[in-house]
Length: 128
Image 1 (cartoon, rainbow, N blue to C red):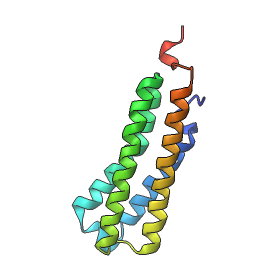
Image 2 (cartoon, rainbow, N blue to C red):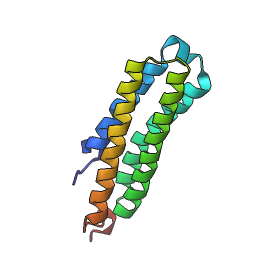
Image 3 (cartoon, one colour):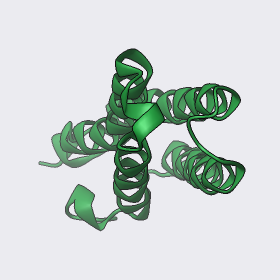
Image 4 (cartoon, rainbow, N blue to C red):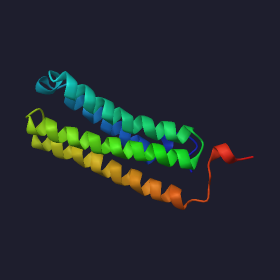
C-alpha cells in the first residue's frame, strides 16, 4: 500500500484529468460559459481531492466512501464534457481524449475500491 496519496496511480491520473480540463476550459468559447467552465473544473478537482482526503482519513472504510464520491465526480466530468461537445465548446478529438481519461480513471477507481473491500488491512487509524 502507498504511504502517500501522491503515490497512487489513480491520484496521478486524476491530476492529469484536472490539467486537461483546465486547458480545455481556457479556450475562447468554453471560458465564456462561466457556469459550465466552473462546474467541470470543480468536478475534476473533486475527483483528485476526494482520493487524497479519503487516503488521509487512515481508514479503509472511509477511504472507500471517498473513492465512491471521486468515481461519481468522474462521471459528472464526463457528462459535462458531453455538454461542452454538444454546444461546440470542444471538438470531437478533445471530447474523446478527455472522456477517455475520465472513463479510465473511473474504472481504475472502481478496481481500487474492489481491492480495498477484499483487503484485510483496516487502515493506519487502526494500527496499535
